[in-house]
Image 1 (tube, helix red, strand yellow):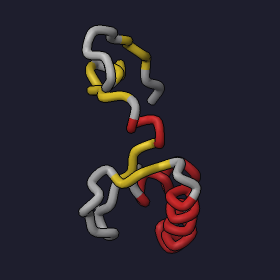
Image 2: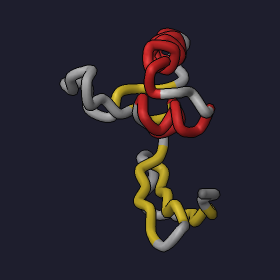
Image 3: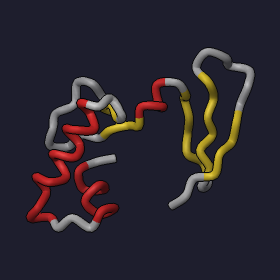
Length: 82
């Protein structure tokens, strides 16, 4: 998720980007998202949901293929809504 994708999802106009930034900051403070790259700058920052700490996954043909980080044996395939 980025500031731009959040604005698009919630219909926030570009001139109100600060509103999306506040939502992101409050969501970070609540530990519901985390930076995709902890060393990223704010201008091009992207974020992952909190549960991304538990699963490693790749997006393939509309499906998120996840694998628990603790166990490399069990694999699950979940559909991703667009």
